[in-house]
Image (cartoon, rainbow, N blue to C red; front, top):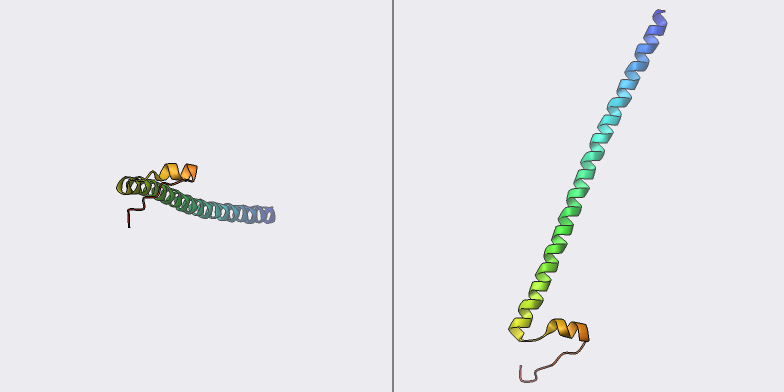
Length: 85
């Protein structure tokens, strides 16, 4: 009966080790997931910032140069002022 008890205890210890290993793997996976999520969010926000800067630059350039850049982008035609050089 003592041999059965030792085998049961050894199996229980192995199960505990496997459970701990799984818990560690899950913790590492969650840390990696959090890292990639944060990196993705950083790139998404950076892309949005660049889009807004670009649109703002088009608006400012249109006002300063008195051109209709958006209309020119849509129609493909632009009025060129030859007096500007």
